[in-house]
Image 1 (cartoon, rainbow, N blue to C red):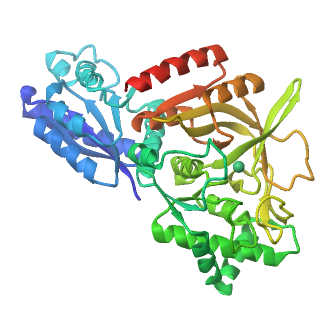
Image 2 (image 1 turned 90 degrees about the horizontal axis):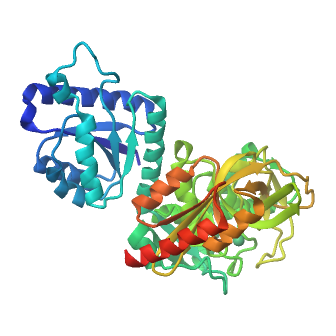
Length: 487
Ligand SMILES: [Mn+2]
């Protein structure tokens, strides 16, 4: 989907046709200039002067699947009662861009004509009131439209809004159910479809095996060429790699046929398969598909959404699991990995394809998987949990480091990080909030984007930062629980 955003500029008839022509020409110029600097085109739609013009452009935006959101701005004063019908019906993300065409006040030229044309400071307050009064989720970004920092913030919000569009069209393919007895990976599929737009449905593992059996040797040869070009092969068991290619091709065929962008499976249900998909899942994630292990369809969908919100629509976001801690004083780190399935987008060096025995699950043969170390960098971990009656999104700021040990006997990809505000306080906060062991770890999506995403979709947002204390978090969660029960 080629997403775009619409620029809707508020005005009124009071100032005469010349002013309206100037407003329209400037709005067009601003949209054109901003489009060159933003990650998605900004399309100037209308200088809105009536209730009907606003209601009409909102209807058009709601029904145009390529429109990922609207930016509004009031060049002149624009009485906001005429915005009520449109904003009430708006179903797309909304950013109120508080800006002004001119940067400086021209002190010699300024007169009342100038004031009437350039009164965004006045018009945007009227516009802001109606957004607040309607309790409409919106992002307010203020600053001159030519400033790079302002453009960066709009671009960042646009990616969060695209995350909303991807969420609203998300379909998840489940192979097998949730891992037996596990709680945090469960959730209300009706609730996520209502709030987030996800269609989460199940397909039989036997159907996947049928599709696998129909994959041709030529198809596998072609994918093996891709594997060889992307990864170092560090095993003699080429037939095990070919089996993973067969799995990948079949899973991709089934997902593409149904329009699914994410899938989950479970080691407890691999009937008819020789290996748990390892390399297969990893290479699918590298292509932008979401994945969740042990039946975790929530993290599968979130992985696909964060990938789509990242650089070029397939950023550095990956399915992750907290595994074990290093609790030495001064060297306090979390070590994250998974049984097999860590996306190579975060690899610090070229990943190796290895084959190792896997005792957990129904593996007749040693599964092939990519083994590598994750790169250094600031990142976040994200967990979506079902609180019963509402969804909670938890984000924590982390810093990924080069693993402090070589770990030559660890047969899986791994990432090591420091959590904010510290390992133990960070863990206390995460556990107090109910965050899962499965997360999406992202190097290029920010907490501000996740907060915007949660606001646009009207779900609870919890952020664990370097300033968070357990006491302040407990207080916030207590008030939040009350507030969400009243909503
Ligand atoms: Mn897991």
